[in-house]
Amino acid sequence: MGLPMTAGIPADDDVLAPGAARVRALLCAENFLVAFGVGAFLTLPLAIKSRGLDEIFFGQVFAAGAIGALLCAGTSSWLLRRFGLAAVAPWGSGTFCAGSVVLAACMARPDTGPGWYLGSVLQGMGWGLFLTQGPICLSTIVSAKRRAYHLMIYGAFNTLGIGLAPLASRWALDVARWHFIDLFVVGSAASGLACIASVLAAWRNPAYRHATPPADGAGRRPALRAVLGLPSVWFLAMVFLCACVYTSMMNFQTTLAAARHIDYAVFYGAYMLAVVAARFGLSGPLSKLPPSTTVPAFAVLMAAALVLLCAASASVVAYALGALALGIAYGLLYPTIQAQAAGYAPAALRSQALIAFSLSYLFARYLFPYAGARIIAIGGYDALLGTLVVVAVVNTAIAFAFYRIGPGRTTATA
Image 1 (cartoon, rainbow, N blue to C red):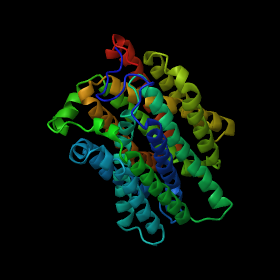
Image 2 (cartoon, rainbow, N blue to C red; image 1 turned 30 degrees about the vertical axis):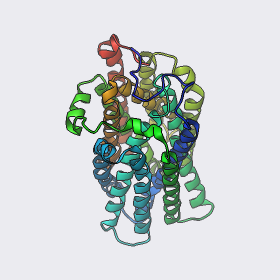
Image 3 (spheres, helix red, strand yellow; image 1 turned 180 degrees about the vertical axis):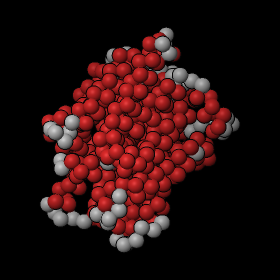
Image 4 (cartoon, rainbow, N blue to C red; image 1 turned 135 degrees about the horizontal axis):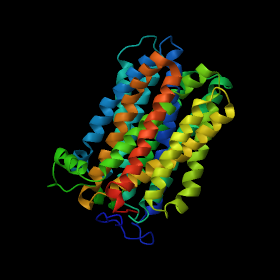
């Protein structure tokens, strides 16, 4: 079965919405800029440790972001019905910018007061809105036939921003002798520019109205229950586990590298190059293969990458190869399962399926680092990596089960 069509979305890439190329460019620019802002704050664990605090305090602060992220992502349907996509889309990067400014201000103060948690909540609100609205914005101007390909390209700009920011941060801290607060100011400015790009993309864009849920549609809870009854739920579980791996490797990489006396720039550089190269170079050919082949293969590669990263302290080659493999695996797996989650949902529930997908991701992204911090406190970074290997193996088992004995055995989506 092919991907169901969304009302208002053209049937092929030769007939796109008016001004689609300009909107896609602006959406990719927004994605890069807000991701660069996120990447600048990947040094937050180091900044917190420089003040004599530990990973558990970081985990608590980061987990506070779940409040905002889940609140905003969970109310996305209502926001779309009430205000429309053109109004709501820029709020994500704008709110993330506000949270970044608050955290930058906290770095200028000696205390550990509520400002840290407020900044994290605001960042979470912004990221939750951005993550749910971004794919919906893109879906209004691309065809269902090529949705997975466009999501991969769109996601490449996200990875480029998140990957470049830590490399720039390393240079700024070690060579230019910047302070952490300087990095956070730059991250705040980047997300502010992302908001401007989003406003320009929404300006006089008639295609955005197609993503607005009907005014008389079901409420969020009935719609969510309907999504949980679809085969898409398998991919909600997969993205949750993928996000556990991703958030741990991104947020604890700077402190992990410091503990093992290795250069975290190797990881971020190799990871970024792998994701960008995979999405730009491999997404086209691989999109022609059946997901029943690619999804399990990407999941296996992710597990193998984590095994390599377990040997990072013994060999910088293993560290680089593990980062490359993880970048290829996650970089291709995430947009593929995102497209599958949308593809197994009927047109009337597609926006809700994408929102549920984002919610599953956000649960893991914001809450798992606290669990990871507890694991580190008890067993160190070896225990964290071992846990992530188990998570990746479970994810692989789900992928094989879906296509071998589950709904994917008799149904194929593009």
